[in-house]
Length: 266
Ligand SMILES: [Zn+2]
Ligand SMILES: [Zn+2]
Image (cartoon, rainbow, N blue to C red; front, side):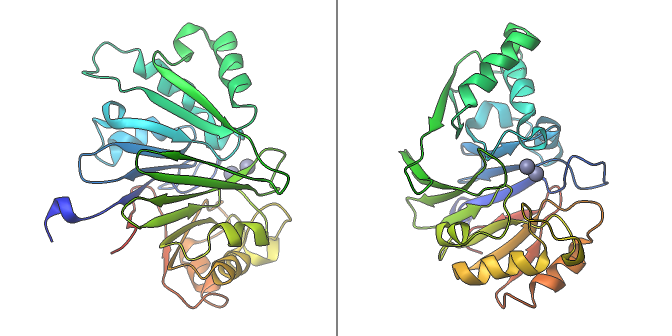
């Protein structure tokens, strides 16, 4: 297979939480549709820009066209202000128009950031898309390369899980932060790649995060092609997480770490 026929790949920029842990930074994921092509970010926690360089996307700011946020907890969104600041930098050869997408409240976040941090915290050539939800907590929009859909997870007031169906027929879903929630499994139904948070060990389960057992259950309920576990807090070993999820999901399981790469269809 030639490099250009590789197909879409998700590159993990941050597979951890807000707590310091070697190799596991705050949430960020870059979807590369084709080698050297446009990038879409899912979440943009602190360290995301730094991680773009670390994974080899030193031209990432010149290729980034869309950022899709799950929710406004700082470990998932804080670098949107660093990103705006960076996009003002004259050293960039080109700054493509950027669409920032997320829950209702995103425009207020952007405005508030600029009010607190100054005009360079506002994107020089960006648009904000707040995704309104229907009565069932679902929303979506079309773009040049596919269709995004989302569902409210209940993790906090605004949190969304996202699905992207690409025009080439491949698909992925990203839980953002969620507890056990059948609506998230339904969103992810049949996707090629299911990127699923797995915050805590089973014995430390909470209502608004997942554990190996409940992450595996979501993957099984959604009948997904492959499960990628991520968003590990320091108390959970990624290897133990994969072993635990295998007790409730019998498909392929990968554990994310900063810099790990996951083809939508290997
Ligand atoms: Zn959160
Ligand atoms: Zn989180």
